[in-house]
Image 1 (cartoon, protein in one colour):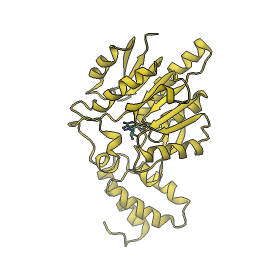
Image 2: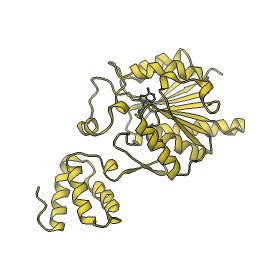
Image 3: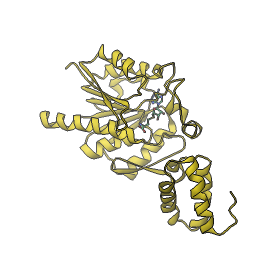
Image 4: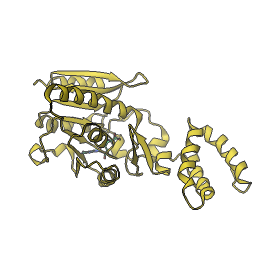
Length: 273
Ligand SMILES: C[S@@+](CC[C@H](N)C(=O)[O-])C[C@H]1O[C@@H](n2cnc3c(N)ncnc32)[C@H](O)[C@@H]1O
C-alpha cells in the first residue's frame, strides 16, 4: 500500500488492509485515532502507527496503554499486554476477598506473582483498599508496575524484582493472605498467534515443558511457604487438570472456572485452614 494519495483515501485503503490482519479493524483505527489526536501532527502519527499495525504490532504497544477492569494501564513492548481473561481472574479474587472481608471484618492482603504491568495487583488494591505486594523477575515489568502505581495513585501497592522460585515469606513486607498469579503458561506445542509470538515477551508467555508447567511447578513450594488462605491462578485448557491434581495434594479445594469463551481458565484454590 502506498501513502502518497490523499489522507482520506489512504485511510480508507488502510481500513480495508487492516481487516485482513485484525479482527477489530474499526476499533484499532479508533484507538489509534484517539491517541494521535492529541499529538502535533495527527495525520503523520496515524500513518506511522497504522503502517506498524498492518505489520502486526499490537495496538496496546502502539498507543502505549490498555484498559483493564476499571483503569488504563501503561504498556511496554517488554511486558505482556493485560488480557480480558485476566479480568476474570481478578473478579474471582475480588469475590473471594469481599466474602472474606464480610466474614472476618479484615481486608485480605495479596501477593501478585509475575505482576507484568501490575494490572492485577493494582486493580485489587484500588478496589479493596488492600495491601498488595507485586513481584516479577523482569526489570521492565517492575519498572512498568512502578509507573502504573504512580499514575493510578495505588499507594498501598509495593513492588520488588524477585524470582518467584526463591520467594521467602520472611522477606515480604507483610503476611500474605492470598496469592494471585497469571504465570507464563504456554506449552511447547500450544498454537500461538504469530503476532503474539513476534511482539510479546517470551519470558511472559512460555511456561516450559510439554504442558507449560515447568516454571509454575517451581513456584508451588514457595507459595506453600506463605501459608495462604487462597490462591488464584490463570491456567490453560491443556494444563488445568494436571495443575489441579498437583495443587489438590496441598490445599482443601481446587475449583476450575471457565472464561467467558467457555475455556478452562482459572483455578480458585482454597487452603485447609
Ligand atoms: C503472563 S505474564 C502476566 C503479567 C500480568 N500479571 C498480567 O496478567 O498481565 C507472566 C509474568 O511472569 C513473569 N515471570 C516469569 N518468570 C518469573 C519468575 N521466575 N519469577 C517471577 N516472575 C516471573 C514475567 O516476567 C511476566 O511478567
